[in-house]
Amino acid sequence: MKRFAIAIAALAVLAGGWFSFQRLFPGTPPGILYGNVEIRQVDLAFNSEGTVTSMPRQEGDPVKAGEAIARLDDATYRSAVAVAAARRDSAKAQLDKLVKRHPARGHRPGPRQPRQRQGDPGERPDKLQPPDGACRQERHHPATGG
Image (cartoon, rainbow, N blue to C red; front, top):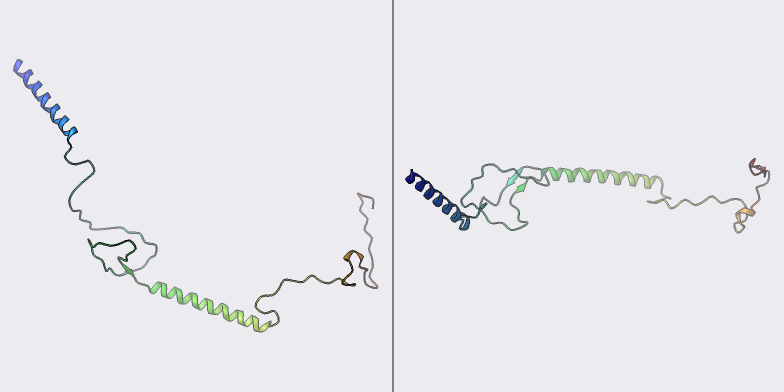
């Protein structure tokens, strides 16, 4: 029985020593791995959509910031530009048609001018008299008695 207790104590000392050695002198820092990673599928997100027409860079090639690694088919963008140009031309034709119909106004009508009241233009508006034959209507306010 004494031998068994000595063996257990020796194993405990060895296990404690090994554990202490691992804690004091780690072989590889945790979270750092070395080796090659094979990637079979990658999900990427882009600012625009389209079909990839060419990839001038291959896996493992060094690239710099802003360098193109793939090219998209620009047919969608070219057709959008053509549609926008057609809409612009249509709007310009409508504008030209309106300008020809109303040449005195020009492209932009000016601000509206207030209507002139009858009377002398230099006279104050509160001194103007109604035109001949016009009726003057007196207004009485019931609350003020006037």
